[in-house]
Image (cartoon, rainbow, N blue to C red; front, side, top):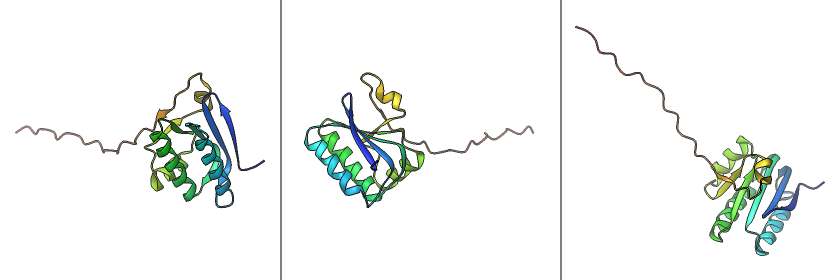
Length: 135
């Protein structure tokens, strides 16, 4: 089995990553994804359910594809990314143009639409109001 597989699922082209995308397989995957976009596929899902690692060039490439698809009235979504991979993408690129399918079931629903990524809210420590002193 290779490091990834591409298949159609309803209106989405699903790119399933097995284990990792690194310098050994990135060029092949990039050519495949570019071909999908050039053929007119505007709905791409990167299935990261079994992914352990995405290289920095892969992260930057997928962010550029997400931006490109958004400009073409398309969508780029991630399926079940780990928190580690979401953080890496957000550090080295951006999640702004990407959507999220939390589970495979969400993707399989008829007309399933991904949801926007939720921005983490900064934690604000709770402070008790000062107590009035009786004189």
